[in-house]
Structures are given as C-alpha cells and as structure tokens.
Length: 239
Image (cartoon, rainbow, N blue to C red; front, side, top):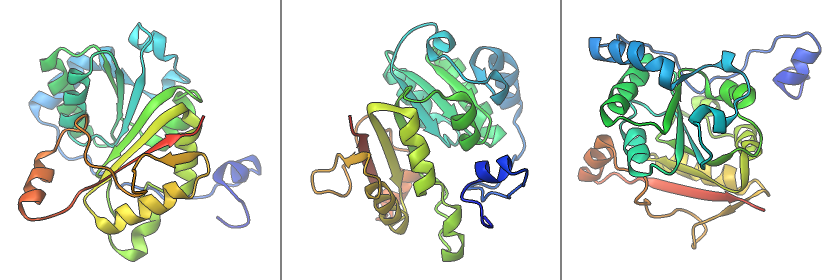
C-alpha cells in the first residue's frame, strides 16, 4: 500500500490505493424464482449502502440481539437459523445475486420477519452501515479458502478485518468462524489469537465442536461422508 498505512490514510491524502478483495464477483444467472423473490421481497428485507448508518431497532421494529452473517451463500443455513431463533434479529451479506435471490425465496416461504439482507461488499457494509458496539454475533462460515499460497492475502480473515469486527461487536459479543480447510482453520486461529481484545471459547484453546445453532450444510454432510474435517472457532470480545 505504498507508504500509506491504510486506504483511509491514502484517501485523506488524495491518493487511490487498490485494495485486495476477498471475493471474485461471479453473478451467474438468476432463476425465475430468485428474480421474483427479489422483486417481491426487496422492499421489505433488502438493505443497501445508501441507507447509511442503520438503527437496528428501526430496521426490525423491535429491540433484539443482532447476528450478522458474512457470505451466506444460498442462504439455506441463515434462513434456518433465523427460523429457529425468532427472538434474535439476523442480517446477511452476500455479493452474489443468485444467492440473495435464493435466500429471499426461502425467507419468503418461511414468512420470516427477523431477517434482512445486503447485496454488497461486507467491508463497506461494516464501515458505512453498522454502528460500533451494535452486534451481538458475527459469523463467517466456509469463506473462500484461497488455498494457493500466493492467494492467501485474499482470505477475508485477516488482522485488520478482525479488528473491524471487534469494533462493531458489543462487549461480550461473539465471532464465530467455520471452515473445512485445515490450513485456513490454523490461519484463523492465529489471527484471532493475535487480538488482545478477544478470548477463545474453546477449552483446549483451539476449536469448538459444531454448536447446534449452526446447521450443517449439504456440502458439509457430503464432506463428512468422505472423511473431511470441519473446524469451528468462537471468540468472545472481552468486556
């Protein structure tokens, strides 16, 4: 990043610095059902950067703990979690439009009132729309592992990103990560252990058993059948 310590510092100096993205935007083709769900549900459940800094009590018309999921894929597990925990508010962020459409289809079918979605870059959502100390939980499940060593810098779980999450979480809030790549699990553990603002909820100091609150995906079940491992991490923001 040249001699600037951050993109914000560069911007203040009037310089543009290209940032490394953790995703490649592959839109794919919307099915008729996905497109219809977006058309019907976006005004009720959709959020965007243009909404600015949010007041979650106003967004959900109630006060409740907020869980933010980054990269919800097709949204099946997110919808299941929102359905299973109606006393909690959920916000999902996904950059791929077919996933947003699929999530809204499932949410519509379940008649959910406690779920909202962004079709945006998670970093920008966190910076522009999420107030500090406002989230109860942030979850990132099975992010792109960028398994080639030269691509590791694209992994979303990096120290700077984790510090941003901590800023947005309330005291005692939880960061919950999961991956089926052992090398990425080790990287996640190293990054989270590197923050003095977090404490590991794993008794052995590494990974936790999958909590019942995180549904298994079909890919996870398929991987288990082939003997593949899955690693869950939960860290709490110190009070």
